[in-house]
Image (cartoon, rainbow, N blue to C red; front, side):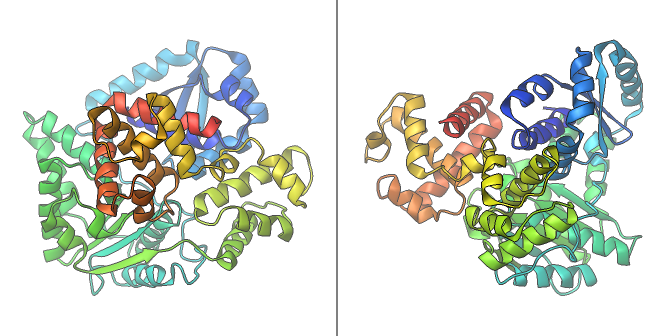
Length: 451
């Protein structure tokens, strides 16, 4: 999947929760990503009706989805197939001059991700304080900084806030934000073109000449020796030069079992700060701030309803608020009642997600593999049961990240948390390396959401 396809896939994922299934299928599912030009994603359709329909009726949810997906673009432009040749030819000429993989382009920090609009509560105050200290004096006392917490609690927001603050105070510093996946992709590109020594030189210089390196989602760091070996040396070079290193993960350092000990020991050698799910009061404060930011006219009753409905994932909470706001704008009214909020969320993926349970995940996985739940929750370790059991455990950790690993192990036949970690990491690796496994996981997820 190239850069354009990945960005569009992320945007589509967010759009699916903002528009009806019918509108999604008619207007968005058939659009094809072409190229990124002047920070605008170019999409292609064969139908004028699709192009005009999106421009007329779906500009607001499309812009919301772009912001929500963290896509590093300013917007999208939809062209007809007849216009395609000029864009493709122009990009091909551009690529002829490209000396290195496009992902070396420094990600611009999201301007709306600042410390001022990050709501602080008991669940995140330590991480927020550490992040501020790093932003004020990078490379000094809190190095490295390792932040971890379940998906959707604000880790990426904090990293971007640090970046924005550092560059506001020291615009000349070289500050780079990346993900473990992009780091690996950069390395793979350089290795595949190993006959060009200049590429490997650029790769090393790119990371080792930084003043601040931020790496998001380190749990996705490739298991390959080359990826971990290169990060190990880059880490040492930056640390020795007193350059700031900031890392984030969806799990504690001790649960990164497939990453070499010499790396994890360095991850934990500085300050480790966790982010827990926010309290009801913090969730209310987050919703109030988001409603003000997005100019959504919503009553306190609705805010309280949302804060009770989603207790763990701030990203889902924000998505539900945006969905209600968009629904209210379509009906030219305020979101002033719980009944109205329920109507707005009736088809949203957020509403569906709250109905997901371990039992539902296990049942759906077993239906997919045509086996019994009792089998994957039993003691048998036959080949035909191992994959479904590991897939089910993996999906629980992804779809229900708030559930402790020990509880997952108990559900699946009284196994301990290390078995769950092994199953999760193995399946995650298989999905990343094998399209067949990736398709199985996506198929089962879709069955779960539509059940």
